[in-house]
Length: 375
Ligand code: CMC
Image (cartoon, rainbow, N blue to C red; front, top):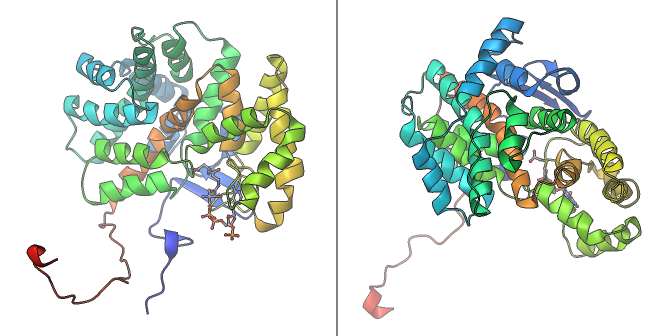
């Protein structure tokens, strides 16, 4: 009997230089650099450069790279029309459709060379926020807002979403959030993207796959669920009973647990601090109080089983306080992750092998075929 590695748990399927994760101690490095240094000292643009080219940029390299990102934000009118057609879709479905539609206008679409894959990765990173913001405007019956080349990546996204200039603090908050979501090893969506790349399909197909895989509540969808849970709980003192009902019925508390981290997800630290500060600043400390009550008093019992908060736990409260509708939370994760998916595809194309595992067959054998008229 073959040994079945269900969920491919603990299976290494290739090498990577993208990120290092030590789940036992909660350590994460992008291209060798600590997530803490990057979150505290870097910018999303710099991190995208690091991921795609493998090194931190010099000032002039960063300036050129940032200019490229800014110059590639516009999406074709035909893609706006497509977004208009799917305006009733969930924002992640619209993003998936939008990325797929962009392939029709990308001159490099079938070129899987590293140069073309990087060019496409830059374009998709730059255009992703335009897709999400345009769809959000269209579904409210509003005109999409054109990208503003004077704003950085995070600032321009907020500007296109709300049609008003964002303040510096909010921009930095989103910039850090994008950094924290940019890359994460063989997570389910990156694996999905790699499977697509391994057939020598193309980056648009791979990123479309990534978006589809990320959408689920066990992956990117948890932030949305966490905030819904906090709203349902309403007050810290209700948290215990609320969670007990879920756990006693075999359910899971969203924002806790991780396939790789058996200690606290190192990304959570940066969002915890920011969620607290933002809640106090906005005069709404309640959400952070509910979340920390959950963490400290309800889920603390699960720590010895390796269940700690993950990156999504505090993210939802931040987006909520920024006035971002809850069904956009996963899209923000996806926008941050486009560079990571691109890098995973670069690595896959570089030393490709078709990803094609086996399934142990447990169904019937050699059954006698009965013609339809005799069934
Ligand atoms: N609440 C309650 N119990 C949990 C949770 C949770 N959030 N997570 C895991 N468990 C339990 C699970 O029920 C199982 O118990 P038992 O052994 O008694 O059956 C045990 O822990 C091991 O769970 P598992 O499903 O084998 O572990 P996994 O590594 O496959 O799960 C996970 C990883 C993320 C799917 C899971 O922790 C989960 O469902 N968490 C909630 C969803 C969530 O927050 N997802 C965001 C992940 S971070 C963002 C990202 O990178 O995707």
